Structure formats: structure tokens, C-alpha cells
Image 1 (cartoon, one colour):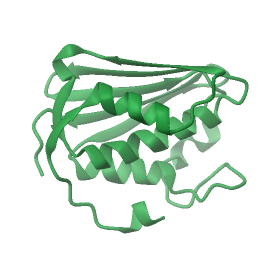
Image 2 (cartoon, one colour; image 1 turned 90 degrees about the vertical axis):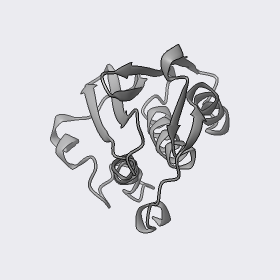
Image 3 (cartoon, one colour; image 1 turned 120 degrees about the horizontal axis):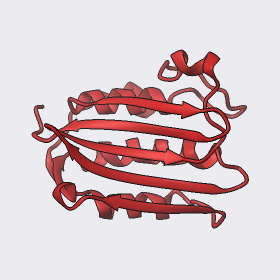
Length: 157
């Protein structure tokens, strides 16, 4: 809840996406039954962004992906350049997101988890937008979900 409530003042720094990805996977306690990979294209390996905000975004998305794969699966992090954006995809082979809740996904206090507070994806959206970016997702029931974070190549904040 603190991540959602506190003001966001991004601080632009050179950030190594591959190092950040590996750090998040290690610190998030991804279980052995989930195969996690970091695939960062060379032209976006180092970007100018706020590494702390990005760390919080990735941590939330990785945590959700792990929870969506209780029996194991694959978690793939892929970063690449698209026009004037760095695109970061976090894809899982989990249960997918049911159609009936997709429109509520980024709403504060909305959760499908018994112990969830409903701020994880709302925080992801708020932090991404604070850096001038967007977040979207694609999901297929029973096959998994891909969250897509687009950040401008040039920090505009």
C-alpha cells in the first residue's frame, strides 16, 4: 500500500536491464520448478530510467507470475527496442487471467488472492506511468499471461 500511496519522483540513472532482471529473479525466490530466463537485446541492455521504480515493477510482476504457476512452468523476461520505446515483457505459462476480471486488473483494492491487498498491479501501472510509460497484458486461459511494459527511450520526467 505504501508503494501506491507515496509520491513518485523518478530519478534517471543508467540501468542494466539484464543485471536487474537476474537480481529480481534471485531475490523473488522463484522456485526450482519454474524455469526463469532473462533475454535482453544488446541495444537495450543499458537504458536511462529509474532503477528503483523498475525494480518494484518487476518484483510485482514476477511475484504474480510465480503465483500463477503453482505446479511450475516457465517465466520469461524479454527486453527489446521498438520505435522510441524500450519494451519489457514478463511472460508466464501459468493459469491465465479469466475474461471477467481483465477490466479490473489495474484497479486499486481489486484482488483475486485470499491474502492479497489489491495493490500490486495498481502500483505497476502507477510507477510505469510516472516514468512516462504504459503497461498492458495479453492472457490466454490455461496457457499464461504476458505483461508488456513500454518505457520511452529518453526519460521525459
